[in-house]
Length: 225
Image 1 (cartoon, rainbow, N blue to C red):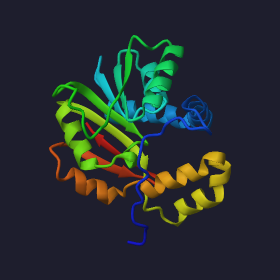
Image 2 (cartoon, rainbow, N blue to C red; image 1 turned 90 degrees about the vertical axis):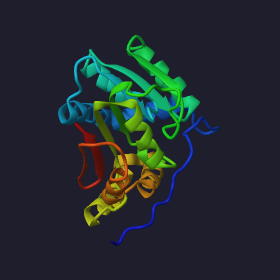
Image 3 (cartoon, rainbow, N blue to C red; image 1 turned 45 degrees about the vertical axis):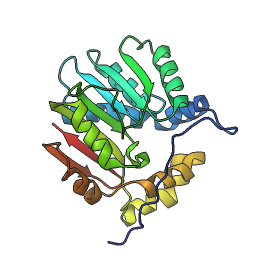
Image 4 (cartoon, one colour; image 1 turned 180 degrees about the horizontal axis):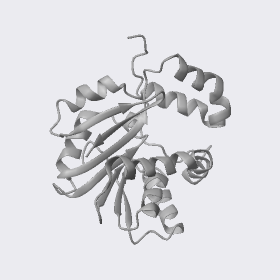
């Protein structure tokens, strides 16, 4: 297979002298508003959360993926975990602005170690474009298997590293138009992402059942019904 080895992106996204996470959040919702909505729509369409589901979002970032899901499904409740305390601050503020604080709680933590969360706690686990940040996806999926109810649902979305010629054209030719100043971050995210085959090999060693991996030109998703 002719694609580059994975280059870990590593580390939580935090405030810097050049950009606060409030500024990052604003850029993300301006450039990716339709993608956040599409993610929420796909969660509902592809894994059909049960009524009054308790949801765990891993790598909640500025919160927009989960916020859009809560706006579409008013019966859902969400806990959002992120490795960046700055992101937790911003996501909480965004949820407050959307008047959703009665149904959402953001907190600092790591997917590899969710010991503060009880077994069989969640009806649904979601994650949007966070998996390429995971230092040890095997551990994260072990933790997901522990906190997810036996009949729980799962929907994880991320980029794929093994782009074909069509995907490479989109990134290198159309990328400057599509991503603008965020292009270098998009490229580094792709370089840090996993291939569908790598994810399938990881999941095959896990206790999760009834999962599938779907892939299109640019992205992949993991679904459990």
